[in-house]
Image (cartoon, rainbow, N blue to C red; front, side, top):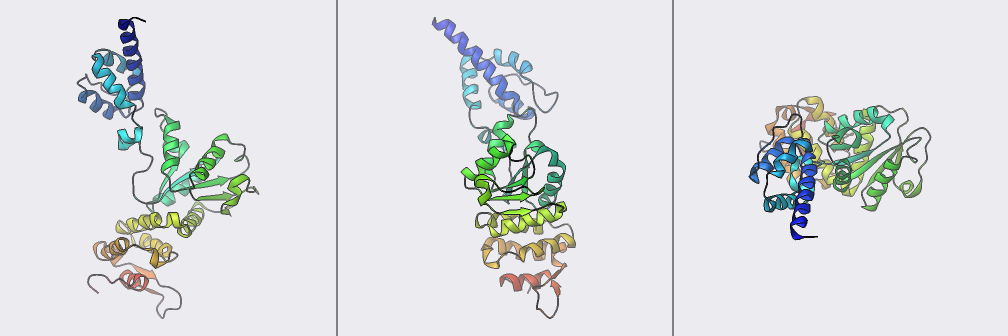
Length: 306
């Protein structure tokens, strides 16, 4: 092939590659990338820009710019922009593996956990059709702290569910299997912890997941981060009491100095924590006390004014 033909072939390949990769990104991000490479920007009509609108802009670029842009876009998406990250916070990150027919129930469980600053990735819900959803799914499995499998009739036959559990097992992530419809554990997943959830409400299932996370050494610190963050931003007394109930299930020795200090700060900076009356451990003369008193008993730390 003559050098001129090879250059044309390289340009065509780079144009098509850039158009496809840019189409997968958010429209505002694409505008920024094009502007930084000295190219005309394209106004998105939806939250992404289709490749047929990108190709004319890319054709106007010189070959050096085009090849440089293609090389940049080959970087892993999680390094390109934060928008592509499946998880964002520092708290507990869970991946939910489930059959599509249980999506509504699983979504309700997720909502309870997310109110407690626990991030949950539900593949069918959280992946936009315009994204490279296989890559996003793989990123979620890579970055999750643990996986919860909602096992019921048909789960074993599901190619996706089986692979998701296998991926988590291969990366030594803690796994909780929740069973119903008289399903039984199978394969390597049968060796991990399992609990029944036949007629449980979503809130009850969420409590089971939190209790499990509190017993897993690999998950405990992230769980505590989520609970402390929830207390710091607690909008009402009920939320504060709910978090205290969960903290009581975790040994105080599991709290890092930083988390304990943040609890102490929340006891004075957030009125919904400071003035909350919370339950004490059993056996005490008074069954409820102010949060600051409970905290001093729980951790040995005192609030700044105590």
